[in-house]
Length: 236
Image 1 (cartoon, rainbow, N blue to C red):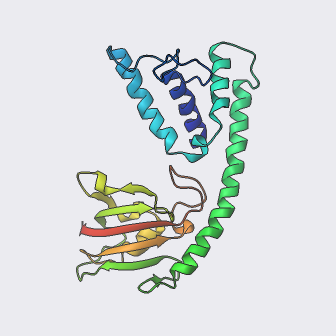
Image 2 (spheres, rainbow, N blue to C red; image 1 turned 90 degrees about the horizontal axis):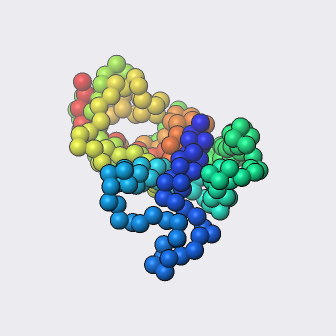
Image 3 (cartoon, rainbow, N blue to C red; image 1 turned 180 degrees about the horizontal axis):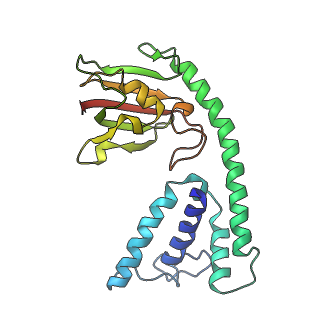
């Protein structure tokens, strides 16, 4: 469960960095229970590195990031100090499963409507082509090279964004472009890449049903329209 995973990370990082909103300050902006920011041992450095890594995963998940942290702290204290708990671990897991399923159900309805409205407006833009499948594309850089088949491997540079511009994936962060069999990618990519010539660059507007679908994937909420700039570098 993605959300339960991130909730667990949130609990772990709070323990690692010693968060406690009720502790007193030492006069230097640090709570009395918080460890020194000078990392002197390998163990302290390893613990801090684990916390940084886990903290990043918390920050990229808005459903966890926006929860009231004082209640997270309270639950951690109850657990660590072995106090009477409002929920036991099994009850907490069951509640989280139900809670996030409810949130996802609401997101699915909301995002489906937002995506439909976005694509309807986007279809009116000059240079946008709408296919019968619902896929939309713009040609950013044209070319006259060979085109891949469904059985081909392709080498591409790409960037993936949400409708609000949030970048969730990009080959810019990698030293090499991405190579994969065309049969392994989402339906929107399969359709578009077989129409693209080697050397061309297209912007794809992928409806949820041709992309990531109804389930959340990492930073991508359920039923999201995704936007990709894809440059076809080579065909194998």
